[in-house]
Length: 199
Image (tube, rainbow, N blue to C red; front, side, top):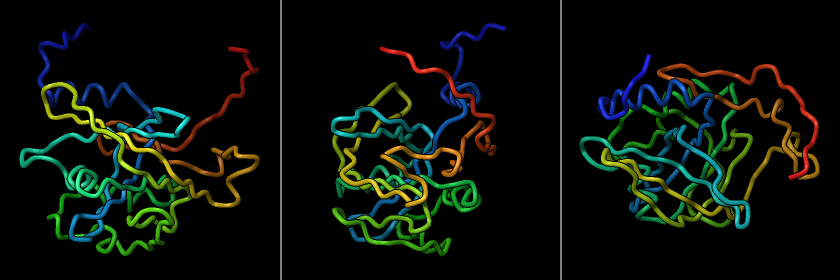
C-alpha cells in the first residue's frame, strides 16, 4: 500500500508516524508556571541533539487553545527538567498526560514526590531513576500544524546510584518506558550486543 503524504491531514499523519517511529523514549517533563504552579507531562517526540554541551530536544505540539502548559512554562521561565521514568511508573506517566487547567498541578494531583533541583527552580521527580536539569536554549517551529521543537541544555544529570558505572548507564536496570502508538507502551525486549566499529 502506498500513502501519499499530501493526501493525509495532520491527525492521520500523526497516527501513521507514531505507529512506525517506534519504540520512542519518553521525556517526562516537569516545569513551573510563571506563578509557581508545577506541571508534569510526557512527550515521546524526544531525543538528544548535542553532546558538548549536552542538549536534548522535545517536540511539543499545540492544541486548539494554543500552546500546551509545558511549552508556555518553558518559554516563561526558561527552565525544565526531563525525568526518565521506569516501567514501574508507567501508570502515573500515562495519567500525567490528562488535560487539566493550568492552575492544576499534575504532580500534586498524582501525589508524586519531588526533590529540589540544584541549579534551577523546577522540581525533579524523586522516584525517577534519571533526572536532567535543563535550561531553555531555543525553540524551532516546524510544519503547519503547530509543531515546535524545544531544545534545552542539560546542566546537571541526576542518576540513581545503582544505574551508573564509569559514566555508563545500565539500560536493563533502568527499565525505561518505551512508547508505541495509541495507548500502548512497551518494555525493553531482547538486547543484542554487536562488535565495536571504528568510525
